[in-house]
Amino acid sequence: MSDPRAMIVDSETTAQRLPLMELIEVLREAFAKGCRTPLRHHHTITQPGQAPSTLLLMPAWQEGVEGNGYLGIKIVTVVPGNVARKLPGLTSTYMLYDAMSGVQLALLDGNVITARRTVAASALAATYLAREDSSRLLVIGAGRVASLIPDAYRAVRNIQRVNVWDVDRGNAERLVTNLRDRGLDAEIVDNLEEAAAAADIISAATLATAPLIKGRWLKPGTHVDLIGGFTPNMREADDDAIRVSSIYVDTKDALHEAGDLIQPIESGVLRPERILGALDELCRGKIRGRASKEEITLYKAVGTGLADLAAAKMVFEGFPGS
Image (cartoon, rainbow, N blue to C red):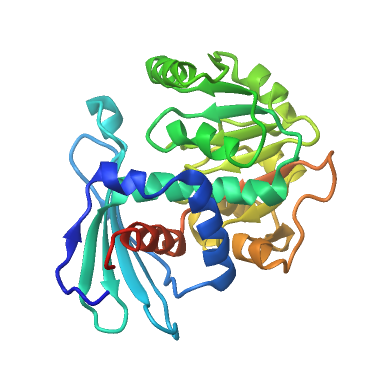
């Protein structure tokens, strides 16, 4: 960390330095240790003729660290209207600094960091919450993040079958083709109810504002992973799914940001004390995860700067002389 010249790391190199199996374990240690992660800044941007966009600022830093400490910030734009433009709905950049001197160390591809740390964190949560014999995975969504979900879950569970559903069937077809080309047993599903009822793990990574997952579809022992919704008006699971599940979050900020929690809390369906804990508590062993094979578990993620910082540190420290 002595070189003051900031390096620019492209998307391909960023991805190469974040192999999912290793990243999952890096995140396990990072969540156990913790760092400073102020509540992210949300700014709404309105443009004529399209749904409001969002600008997110996500800082995080290490304090009291012996040796090398880091500070980072991710800048994210979320543009729902990009679906019609055939462009990614989310774009981000990550800046990494020396926490002691404030010197900029690197500019990294935030899209890759976001996607890979997101699915790695969900897979990490699944090591505590999903049944060990889980073998059937349903992926809801087929975008940048969703496309990595099968690889992340295969790092922690013996996934034998992957079903994919997306509001745009063409996107689902492309993802399934990619999975099959890599030797996975993958199939597009059109009946979401049947696919959900057969799944051991359901992982949703969408920008949905109306529930896609119904509680009445869930069989005993299912693990539900809600990745996509991160604003109060976004929703991927209905009230019944909330009622029947043991609920965990990636960070307690989810109670103030995620529509999947905010809306049922406001309507009286969910009491905040029913949320059993956060990912850092699972990683520290302060709380237990799944209690039985029949339990339905639900993990709600909104993303945290802690995971971004851990991933950025992993990329940067992979270079000689860092």
